[in-house]
Length: 130
Length: 279
Ligand SMILES: Nc1ncnc2c1ncn2[C@@H]1O[C@H](COP(=O)(O)OP(=O)(O)OP(=O)(O)O)[C@@H](O)[C@H]1O
Ligand SMILES: [Mg+2]
Image (cartoon, rainbow over all chains, first blue to last red):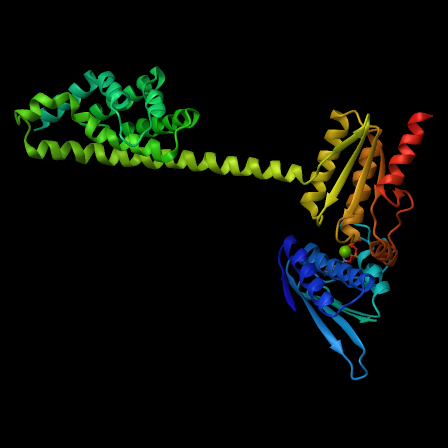
């Protein structure tokens, strides 16, 4: 699933799309809520800081039967000059709680962020679904 | 021929009032009786008289631009009057197009005796028809604007409905929030809860979020702000209806709700408030 994020309503669209995928996977309520809030956080960061970008959701299936969801949030916005700071709880340049990125990092099983000032930001996360 | 046009123009001006009455009195077949009464009302007749005068002037004026301006002005107001009288856009346009023939009603004698050259009659139409089209266009625009306003009003009424404030006992109300919260909705919840708290003299408000599918950091932040604004105005706010999976993600996000009065459910919050009231 690929959702272009250009407006606030696209955040909801991404969440709705994500919810349907997770339901199809029979993911539990808690896993669903975690992935959905990660979608929400990443999509909102795109909308707030980059204006435009895209969020991709992929379902991962390992031969052993292990299943997971990978989210990729990519934009060509201003980038983050101090990524370490952005990952600290309470750091926000928009008057927010500054809990989005550290929260997503905490809730997901894998977290990777690649950001270059002036070029853009790419956040990739993975959550195994039990 | 110019002479003839001037004659026709002046005669229209002279008889403007009578022509205006003709429109009202004439039983336009498609219009119901009740609408006919509206058209015959004094205000309509008086106002309509002006456009016939303008039609008359249009036949010999040197300053068409100025005349068109006046026609536009007239049309704008005519649309307002029509709107207030409850006439639909199609009723109004039908009435306007009837003017085309009405102007000739004072010339029955001349027409019967074929006093006007065919070209003159054509010239009259060539002058008045575009004016009639113009009136129709301007009036449609006013109707359209009016409809857009109506829609917007209906829309905001609908939005307000999406933040219902339900008074339960004296000074206590529940605000059940159902559906996703975006920035606009959050602002609306803030506005409605503050206004209604003041209007209803509330002391305690229960914000119930059991119908909110997800509480992310933005929504959490907005809830904090709504609650502190309520607190600032002396209202005690409770937050209820946080489902278990939502509680887990709030913890996962590391968002601290400890400074908020959260209760497991509405009943719990209510009994606590009720208990306090008895004290
Ligand atoms: N895609 C992005 N492009 C540019 N800057 C970003 C992006 N995502 C995050 N940032 C920067 O990192 C900071 C921290 O982000 P984080 O999501 O943790 O908190 P926040 O968005 O400020 O508040 P919230 O708690 O509501 O999410 C932001 O304030 C912003 O400066
Ligand atoms: Mg954020």
